[in-house]
Image 1 (cartoon, rainbow, N blue to C red):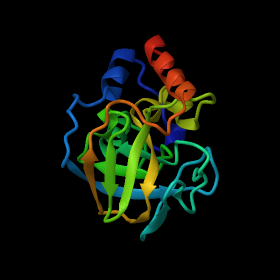
Image 2 (cartoon, one colour; image 1 turned 120 degrees about the horizontal axis):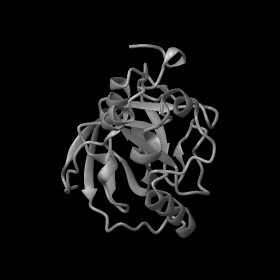
Image 3 (cartoon, rainbow, N blue to C red; image 1 turned 135 degrees about the horizontal axis):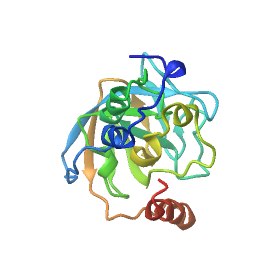
Length: 204
């Protein structure tokens, strides 16, 4: 692999689109499980997150205590991205790893990107997260976007509110407790409308 600072995006747009295409849709079911591949935090917003060696504290209605995005004032308290999405970025030649797309939880073996809003996940022994937003609109483009010509996280990353706190570390299980109906009481209507409009316009 090459470092992102030396990266040149594929000239063939079709080839790049194929590499960025998400995995086939797998319906979410109660009892589905995956693994926390990494728990990542950063002290500043807009930067890559660093994988943590040990357990981190996740606070109810706040997020990961030491992470810059932790806040009780909004619905995007924690973020998740599938390792399989990171692998597709690696297939483009990017030298990226866990935390480089600013996700808190890098999961493996679970189709998080297709889970409907309102889906509840148990992460580790105690933490419960409800999915509150799927994808995001980037008002300012990140460094990876400019280097690769695209970024996976706005389409394939998901966000959640923490309903129950506890500790989480790499290797913990992620389990689907409830399949959502596509809505979340914690999500502002205008935030969801913005994402849906961008998706409909093909800009997400």
